[in-house]
View 1 (cartoon, rainbow, N blue to C red):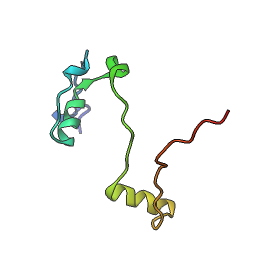
View 2: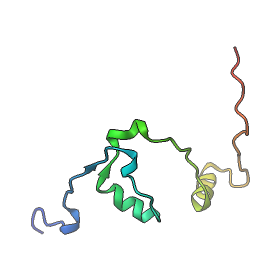
View 3: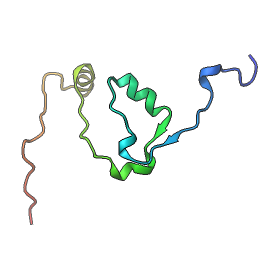
Length: 86
């Protein structure tokens, strides 16, 4: 095989740097999100974006619990954070 003959899909693309949160479209599917982020970067506006808590559910959660040996036990986070002790 010739050097650099990996195919047309493997070529490098220039990223479009997003300058405001308003430039991020509403996505209809996770595939659409993935395609958009392959060509766009939000590194310049990271401080303007809202943090979202990570959640694991469905098959991934079952695999995670099985790996930890906790398949029968499901831990839920506390409803209210504990008060800081002085």
